[in-house]
Length: 366
Image (cartoon, rainbow, N blue to C red):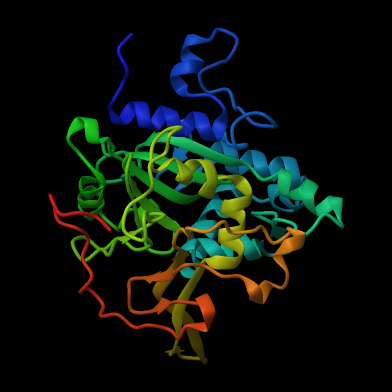
């Protein structure tokens, strides 16, 4: 059989690394259903395989994973809501409003409050092994990956190659290209620029990061803004320069799914190295009987750490030391109105808003 060199082959490779099996393998194996969840020790990096039909375009969640997580971990809290008519729609509407107002990071960390019910939407990664119960709770998180997600409410035929979820909440998207087909990461960046940021999945703050990936390079952005979108390299660097070093075991960008996207790594990044910054805005709402201050946030930047060329120890590693000793090669805020460089106490650098543009077709990537 000839080797596959298209985007589908790259999708299958990433899916197999994360879940332990690919859709193509599941179709060919009678013992495993095509969309049977694959999860647990020895099954890739502990992800489940999601089904595109489970994606809710209006709220940008994986319905099956979201409800299964809540039912399996917090049935008592759900019971407080089930007496209400249309309680499921009430919960999803509250989730949607909270995501729009506070962003995915705060929702994951703080959960969701509906009257007297508090729903935890994510269990944190333990700092150490002193309390096994915390580790057991983290293991109950459902990390999943879904291929060919039809995300658009305006045009249902539009799809994104891969979407990563935590307990049904979207945290990252991936557009894949394969140089063997004549397209590179530059074309993936252009494809993102043509996407509408008005779609729930692609709106700012709803998804933590968007990756443009080919077999040689990775670019990232945290905010889609058409042709004003700013993409930054997510490469390791090679010989004190751009790009990624050769990988004798596979693609140059294999570090993305073999290291960065593992469950502990994603959890560590979301909890400690990713922030959403904004400006508090207050205005007075007046009525015939009363007036009160309405406080909201205007989000201006999201931060996702760029890949460090040196290994990043886990917080529970005894050799890690104090939290303040962490050193990253670079951490960038997007849009680039602010860039943080914590290594060796470097001061914050300021870049002009839209001056940094992604590479043009035919131009070398960094």
